[in-house]
Length: 178
Image (cartoon, rainbow, N blue to C red; front, side, top):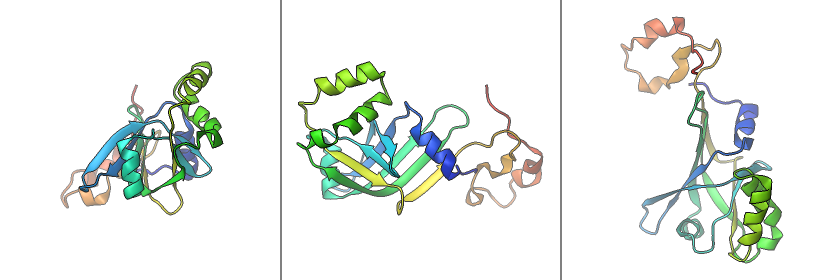
C-alpha cells in the first residue's frame, strides 16, 4: 500500500474541507468518536473543543487520542495518527489564539462567513488543543496512481500464502478512477 511522502502528507493535511475524526477514551475506557474541524500548522494538528465538550473532558483525563483524516474519492488518501493531545490553551483564553481559530474556520467555510462565525461565537469559550506529529504513531496511505503497481495496495500480512495477487499483480497497473 503506497504511503504518502512527507510532502504529499503535508499537502493533503493543508487541503481545505477534510474533516478529522478524533477518538478519545471516556471514563470507562470506551472510545468516543467525533468529526471535527482542524488546521495543520507547525508540525501539529490543532483543534478547538468547546468548554463542555465530552471529548475535551476525555483529553484532560487521558490525553491519548487517535485522529483520522481521509478523503472519500480517488486516490483515497488518509492520515491516521495515534498520539497525545495537549491542551495548549485552556478554556477562557480564546483571545490568545483566536486568529488560529479563524484559520481553522476558513478551511471549511468562505472567509467572510468564517470571520462572521468566529465573531458571533467568541462568547462561547473553547480550548485550543494540538497533537504533535513528531513522536506520534503515524500511518498514511493512498491508492496506487499513474503507473504504480497495484500489488502494493494491501500490507503483506493481509494476504494468504496462495493469494492470486502474488502471481498476477505485477502485471496489474492502477488506473485512475473517474
